[in-house]
Length: 288
Image 1 (cartoon, rainbow, N blue to C red):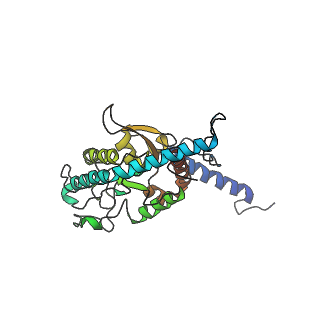
Image 2: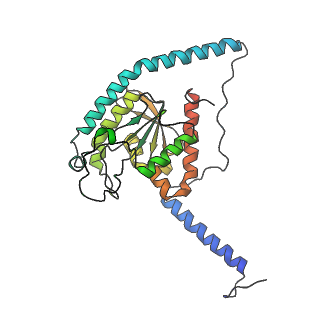
Image 3: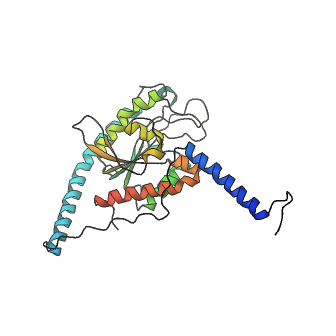
């Protein structure tokens, strides 16, 4: 048996240090609101539904193909109208002066991506790179291509690619349309004023699934102040208006900005993305 300088067996000292580090990590996760951990084995995607024995296989397949063609045709016909609506929303966003952030942020972020996307991703806000204080420069509309920030966008598209989606398949927007200087958090008033812009975008795109990334996006869509850790893992219902408005399913996950700081959270975010993919698969959006 080998003893350390303190007279304690080296293996026992190692176990004690490991246990101490584990306790510290668990306390940190509790502070983040995490009370349960995802299983090591991710659930497999649901199998395609089989036709009833009484229905001929080829007839069922033909009906499904015909429905898919009709759905695609309808989407193509409605896309120009959707693009016009989104253009009007973008013009309204750029001219917005409803909150205190507007004078300091002449540049605004508007939604990017497919006009009739099946997946609509909502983040919190875009960070202006290199702008630590003071007013932001006015940028031409065609130069505003950031969703969240340079590093955050890179991770975002890696996350989308992991479930078989690219920029041409997704519509991405933010709960807050003004750029924010680094290290500045948005105020409640600004987020509240921006909600209608966000609701108008969702109503125009009409996605099958909405993915809210981060506490700010989740709060803007679902209300309340519950953290992502308590909202993720299940679908929520969201309406852009009253009881007669269309309902959308919302999945909540961690924002790329948080995942870049806390890489341990990526496993949970990956599980959330698998659920998003499964929901899209059930609606016939993702093949495979």
